[in-house]
Amino acid sequence: MANFDICPKKDGGIMKRILKEGCGTALPPQGCKVAVHYTGTLLNGTKFDTSRDRDGPFKFDLGKGQVIKAWDVGIATMKKGEQAVITCSPEYAYGASGSPPLIPPYATLQFDVEMIDWEAEELTSEQNGVKRMEILTPGKGFITPNDGARVEIHLTGSYKGRIFEDRDATFNIGEGFEDNIISGIDIALKQFKEQESSKLAIDPLFAFGEEGSLEFSIPPDATVEYVVTLKSFEKSKELWQMDTPEKIQCIILKEKGTKYFMKRNYTYANKFYKKIPSYLESEETDTEGDIGEKRKALLLAAYLNMSICNLKLDENFEAKADANKALQLDSQNEKALFRRGLALLA
Image (cartoon, rainbow, N blue to C red):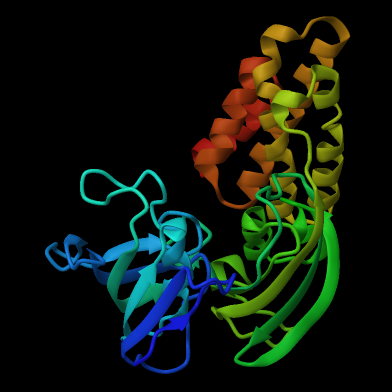
């Protein structure tokens, strides 16, 4: 087959010739982990590298700059089972420096590449959690939202091809549940760039769980798909950027937690209570007087509230640990002693 130009600039810098057609129509999405076999040669036929002499195929994350530019471009055009020769000019390979001792400066390279397979990008630490199946629209820049960032998104949820949710939402990262955002989206957005639109596959643990959703007619233990667009975001201050008085303002987290506790939603209440120690635990040596007293009171209330939430959730080991932390602040606190006793008896 003939060579054709696959370079985005259409300058002939990356040429491709298909040796064997692949299967189907699917192409690997940006961010996925691809597995390929390859042999690299100079134009004179000198081989400088091959995966075929090693135990298994070469794997890398597509579109993340882990390989030369020609690979990020060329591999993205290959179907499963396809074999092709990709020829790349120095600008899209190793440039003026080359890669001594095997690749000289300003070398044009050829790669005989076979696409073996690819896996969707996993966005959680869980093996089966939230997968980025495809980046539909690449985002801008390199900055991503952090915990507490204010995000504006559009989301479209589907189950087996049926759209069950299609709306805009604005919320703070880590608090999406307040706007009925499933945790998988909240987690995934921390790896989105501004104006990125991606297709996600979200397993039950990070979606509607064992109960499913009556509102959306989602059965128990269902994997759902979402197309999510991060329209804009404003990063929140990192902890190291805050002074102690600013951190004391996390009293609003206590108020939010109490709101959910009164509704008997102990899981959501605990999420807010848990944030308070992350703000204040490191401030002990820097706080005196009124600020120090406010810090101690907030921490004590947080540990006591975390303890009762964990008791309600039958998380007795955590309930005991939280009560012990409260007792470190106030060794005679009756609530802490009582809740530790309940945890020990459970």
